[in-house]
Image (cartoon, rainbow over all chains, first blue to last red; front, side, top):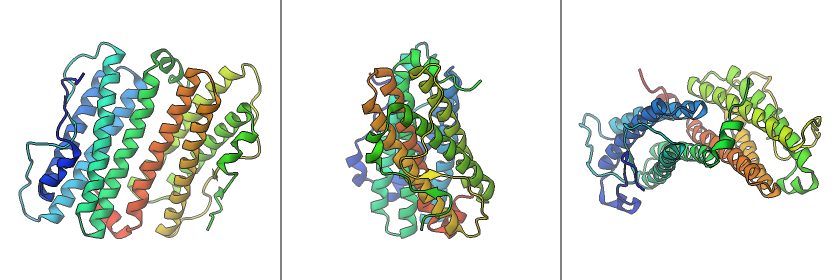
Amino acid sequence: MVPPELDEGLPLERIKDFSLEELLGMAIKAEIGARQFYESLAERVEIGELKEKVSWLAGEEKKHEELLRKIYADFFPGKEMVFPKEHIGPELQPVARKLDKVEDVIDLIRWAMKAEEIAAKFYAELENMVEDERKKRLMRYLSDMEWGHYYNLKAEYELLLDWAMYDQMMHVGP
Amino acid sequence: MVPPELDEGLPLERIKDFSLEELLGMAIKAEIGARQFYESLAERVEIGELKEKVSWLAGEEKKHEELLRKIYADFFPGKEMVFPKEHIGPELQPVARKLDKVEDVIDLIRWAMKAEEIAAKFYAELENMVEDERKKRLMRYLSDMEWGHYYNLKAEYELLLDWAMYDQMMHVGP
């Protein structure tokens, strides 16, 4: 089931229908959406370890947004940013409801994983689209970071599926 | 060149020569080594963004060590831990020298990536060795987390290779 925080978006193949300018705008919009999603999730989740992790992810997405704005300004100096209404892959929205059961959280983490996976592939595609070696490097950086997020979320997801164990094992330390 | 902080260790295939008890001991030792490596690297590195990242990694490895100690206690209750002197894959040691050039840092990050990659594969092998579904899940968790670290380091590594750009782009924010 697709939760209300999520719009599935266009498939990755549609990337070729947009200009680099539009794709950078999309990427910035997606980073903002992801940050707001993680921030709101951190507020609503009561599992300490997970709260900490999603707060960390929110901070990471904020840094990516700033980096992408620099890249945009470098590509299109002085130009006002274009934010297409379409987006490639799931676009995360703030969580505005109460999360009653661990299953609600599991559902959202699964969609966040999907969004991170598409983001990683999206940046890898942008790497092919840009010609300058430095810009390629920056797209590789962003793609690798999103893979990092994907695996980090996947780890939590696996453990959340066995809630009793998560509860027992993740209260590590004193 | 292999830096002094690193002992290349045994290849992953040698995993079959050890008991589960020994392998868990090895894993705990490796997590401790990795934490000390990241802590010492954080002290010696002057690149703000990277300092923050390796400090974060140090904290993560600390949590893994605690989790593995719980798993060990659960597998072998009341038994004193065995720490084999051998280890699978690169064993990271504290950085005790001054890091003069960015190349020194790049070298260490590359080895840390290698260590994280082997650790991810090591835990995936342990997942096959344990029978209990919960223990498999925990090994999968650890393996995914290490992949997360691997990609996070890979992202930094890629950008560090072009130091001038790293310096320019990573001073994001005000």
